[in-house]
Length: 287
Ligand code: NAP
Image (cartoon, rainbow, N blue to C red; front, side, top):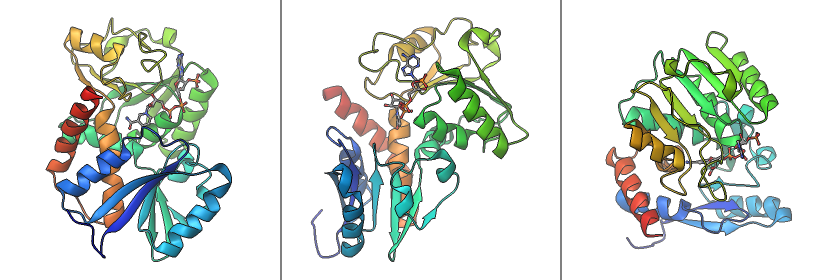
């Protein structure tokens, strides 16, 4: 693919952005779907966010992603926020529509897309989610839009799980949403899906698992949103026990696909997700 006068520039801003997979993912998607765009990363210093946004607007950049520490501080610069993203308190994608900056958080929808792509229905399902941090918030706000039968949130710091459950209940008053401690779960067999959003399983906790899979039913679907390592201790146990399981790569790829679809205002080809997941899994294996 050649760069010409019509090539559009998209980027990730954050600090640090070193080691980010976003340029690899987005540029692979651009190549796969013949999109005349390039994706770069910019390490933005603390006091220069305002200048950076002004520069993007002056140059007419069509969109950008935001990572830590600017996912919240970007909000005052936006003209519009889509969906529950403001309640989540974090924006990861911005579109420039003729000088109007529109923000969205694609993390939760990216996670849910994995279920649709793999023909897993969430209807009437009981979900146990571990963690109540930023990623858990995004995922929970999307989960409560599905027709679940129950959502149970467990977190090391109990108050954070209680607060999140309270916020979610305001949006979906009918759904059974609870916050609990791990030791309060008496009947593990009732859960259909287990999601780990804690950092337990990543370095330096890569030898640890946030939960053992003893006592869950055979049809349990285990999701760990960690993608480095590709196979956490939790997923190794899931594999050993024969559970269906997913690592964090599908969510990572899907949030990028949804960002591109938001920027371009069109659906990408159906095979982009599967091919990019394969590519990134291979890339990380060699890493
Ligand atoms: P965060 O906001 O810092 O939240 C971290 C969560 O982990 C909190 O719930 C925290 O509990 C819990 N935790 C940390 N250490 C723990 C321990 N030793 N024992 C039990 N719980 C512990 O982080 P985040 O942004 O939500 O990210 C969480 C994970 O998701 C990271 O591994 C990140 O790489 C991954 N992630 C993946 C994707 C993807 O696209 N696949 C996207 C975003 C994030 P407390 O509240 O008690 O501190």
